[in-house]
Length: 316
Image (cartoon, rainbow, N blue to C red; front, side, top):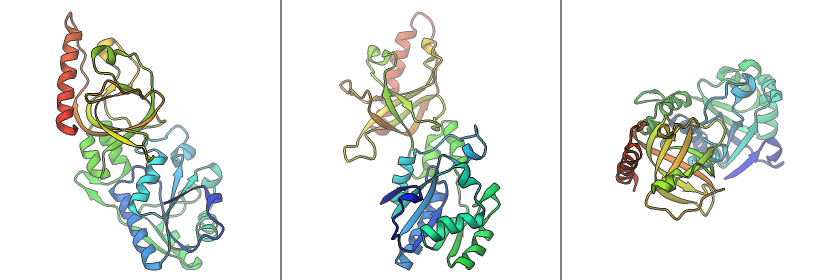
């Protein structure tokens, strides 16, 4: 799969394309339906399937300070879109200039002049153009004039309602990572760089990788989780290890900084400082607990041992 950073990266000789458009944060089942339809049409037309996504999230430009928690980094999003079958992904920088384009300008500049669209696929709630003035009917009308068809895919419903990024974010926020995984078709992932923490885990016999998470990450609710730690994701050197992950402030030690800390099961020899890693959350084991009293440390270590046993049962 090819990845183009903006329209400037699109080859000058780009052939006629079938284009899917959306933010696609998380690439959940609803998103996969839209992209899958574009791939199907691309095969029928003998054309490449090109996906347009946006970075940063449009809300941050249109309504600064309202950036939603993200279900995927841009690297993860592009990798997932490739797995669905996209031949190329255009990561469009969402700027005030882009937001100010009229629907006609967006269609002409992006879809017609650069991508030579013969078919366009979007979700039925798609809006575009200045102040979201264009909708699927607008797009279809412009398509008739400019020579491309438009397919507006209906929203899909799962076990808890319509599959949407907002719905999945709500599941993650409550710690229901199992239901989130059902909607995503994969475990929810949080990424970051391993940095130094308080080193208490090593002192207690459970050394952890402390993540400086990527900005605006959708972090699950405080608690302990069974997970998998992926070292060097999206590279040929990627390695996946079973892990127990703590999310929270370490209340037993009066912590006030919310952290994501991963203990790779039965490994005390890993040196991951400075490495980019991903945590794939599989199952919530318990909520966060504060241990008090003269036996607090012993009680904490005993609970950590039980947490590791449960994580091992779930992912080991």
